[in-house]
Image 1 (cartoon, rainbow, N blue to C red):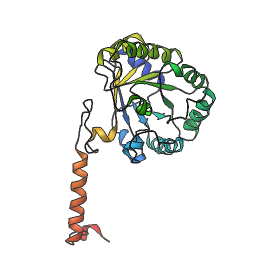
Image 2 (cartoon, rainbow, N blue to C red; image 1 turned 60 degrees about the horizontal axis):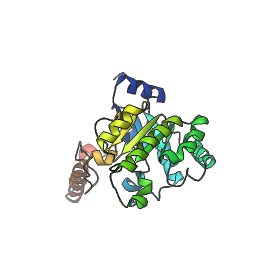
Image 3 (cartoon, rainbow, N blue to C red; image 1 turned 135 degrees about the horizontal axis):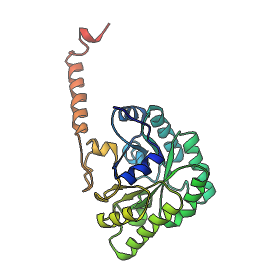
Image 4 (cartoon, rainbow, N blue to C red; image 1 turned 90 degrees about the vertical axis):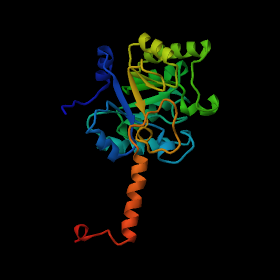
Length: 267
């Protein structure tokens, strides 16, 4: 596979050419290395690490240090994808200066190549501050997991005229602030289409329909490793959870029956 390193500029070119963008989450070195053998354009080191790896009920307890730690591991394994690090809850909304300082740590210590911020037009000045310092920013509107208590759960956003207007205005504000792309999460497909057609930066959907410039899923979800989590927008491409349990039980059975290790597996 003849691959070139994905950059922010490359992603903007992909939108212009109508080429779909592929984004997946990763949180560790091994998964990042496997991505080198695939065709993933963007690796998102999401604060979804809280739900999937750290065992939290939501993303709110995730710290900046958590994201730095996991981003650095991903960066060490990555060759081709653009590595984007989530900015966790309350690490960027207090002031533009706070956002810049923490985004800088994700770039310098976590070796991220861009950061992602949740929020609409109200964080336009924060995004601009970080972008002006030379740090690429990915926006994120619609359902924003860090605001789960405000929304009262995982709910589709943009069903009424007021919130639709807010989403459209926010998308344009985020573009004007200098962001290079925008995640649309749990947004009706027609609203996602309108936003995608109205801005010049790529949109990346999750539960936002087929009209976005790209799509993102959480790696453990799409590999079928998370039990009992089957939202409408999720498609599973493997059942690794079942395969892992089967492999572990086979190993345990062979150890107890003294089948393993056999002569091929010891010195």
